Length: 510
Image (cartoon, rainbow, N blue to C red):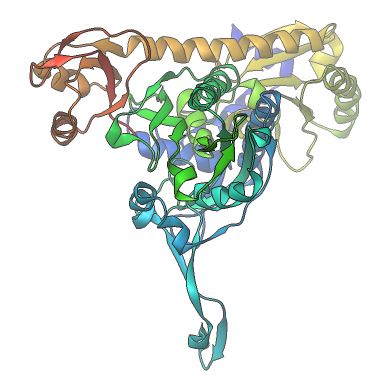
């Protein structure tokens, strides 16, 4: 019945669309068949990014960058609403700076790109490093900016009146990764890094938790991606931090993704760079610090949370195009009539504050456009054909459910806005149900070994030792993703039987 209705409304295009959509859909590997290849196929077909000539780096294509820009805009607004300002610090860091904080240099030593010379010279077969240009002190391409920023803070902070300092930086960083995957782990990536300085420990801890909550809110309200929050174990915390807090999301394949971190740095960097202030009593004290960040890894998380075997699925709040209008016609006369009908629809939706596109490209058939917008995750599609003009109707199609309906032309902006809100909500609820269904608690190590093979989050007791944590990791490839907040829940470690303060969250991860 639905096929007959579609044929009637769009005058024979149904067969053509099937011919175009099915071949394109086959370009994307089934998730159940090969999840890793499915992910790469979605990135390719959605035209999000591609590998660059430099190993481990990526070219972010316009559609992928537009998603990142929307993420950036939403987060930047949230940062400024919590009192933060944007600044920019150098890409290059003197090598000696990393030596000042022992844990920090140990944590990043194997990931640093090092600049040793300042210029090239022409040779017979091209160019070579000029040996006369060797730097007196090597420079590190920033893997993170704590050291260069705290060198500046030493000059900015003299008195309690100079505190707090609440700075955020949007930048790129380089970490020499051996195994890379587009968005999820690349040698160079885009991110934001917040760096704050405070007069008291309490203020710094409050800041750390506040920014963790900002990340959680962003993930759930904009990305429609449910997350767990908590603190990392000592072996998993950021190099140089006292405590590292994180948000963890569960992807469709049952693996966890660390989507953001917020670090309480204590006074480690203040002491390393001698950053002190004079308090109200005239006493000189070291300041307290935090740092926090999310990166283009969020785009990878967005893909793996919502997308399907037809391509990318985007939550409307982050979609570069929220509604696309596709005109359908056979000849110039129909084209004129359909576009005259579609343009006021476009204007009404645009004037309602919705990001809408009228895809009137003449060199592409409707079937190709349908498949392309589906692969790129446009949340809502409106098809307009001659019969729609005649009956004053429109066809709406949701990207998340692929459901279609014929609606009256009147009130289309209100209808579209309502559907976009429902899509945003439904995506979150679907992802939350998936996470809840794949989260369970185990008591024994044998049960844990069986359950971890199924993927998902597992709560279990752990005795708090590095030895037990490493044993679990070696034997099961699962790691402690976080220690949840809240009161102690005494029990016995699933491995050793020793006393355990509370359940911790395990998963295999990216």
